[in-house]
Length: 99
Image (cartoon, rainbow, N blue to C red; front, side, top):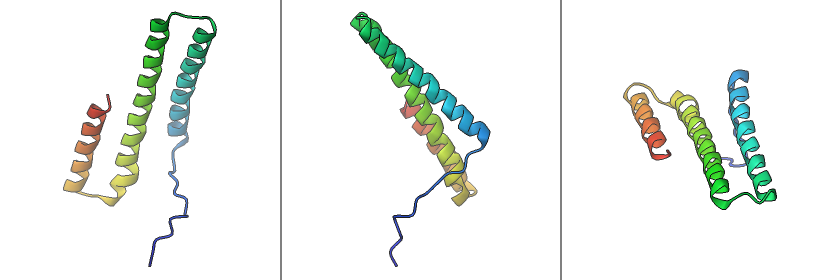
């Protein structure tokens, strides 16, 4: 029987995890607002690029953290023993690649 793909998957997060993720996104949002102001104030292009790079780096950092939580939390429930160790290696490798 075909799996029902219309079922919405969710991830339960602790209030602490939600707060930490929201705080990171709020800081990124603030960086983006700052970049918009720089454009409105005719800031020098290299200065805008530096801030844009910082915002992109912050978003990549958020993505690395969320991916690690997904692999170590959601996916790890399905693995044990040596497979769990391999998941840890996968997380380390992905985080290094996504820098």
